[in-house]
Length: 270
Image (tube, rainbow, N blue to C red; front, top):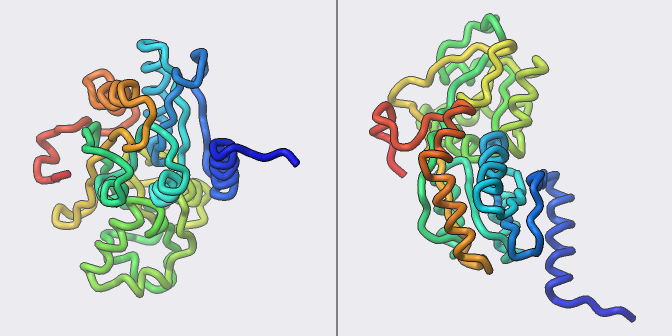
């Protein structure tokens, strides 16, 4: 009988988890030689476009390949906790980072950009939706991120609870996406009347946007930090510093994210 090493078992377990969770793993085009030259980064699915571009720029600059696992933050935290593998974590907002930090999975974060939630409605706003309170109107079809898997899903439920409409909204929910990407698809396909997504994900061809009232702001700061179990602490820290550098922040801006810090969001704290 062929026995497997503990490392092999851990790798197989992680691979099965990724497959079962429907995660996306992306490796940069430039592959550096040797395992020590590759970083594994856990990234929120809504950050895929800027983080892919950042990984490519980092590889070009430092010769270190970057491999990503993209999924909802809750899924990523569970994977990190089980596998104890990987080098950095970047979720959609600081609440999810704190969960990982409280579990001892990551160290102190740096900050790169803002995730700015907005209400999106079908083009032309045929249902005459004006505010988040309208999400409770009977008969509407609402798409939301999962409350246990996405930062925006968790923040949205907090907002609905503050307005006293959480139960009414939930009766209208036709989708709780494991990532924000599924919510965007529902809006693009016209299967939902309204949703909460982030500004960078808006498709102006299929959606109109409605800004949240100032008192309802759900703006999140995007944090990143090295894992506590990385076997490449210097490379992991170099990646964190690159993401939070002016060069990294500029890539976020190119993909529709305001860079951190921004006076327009001075009231938003990590």
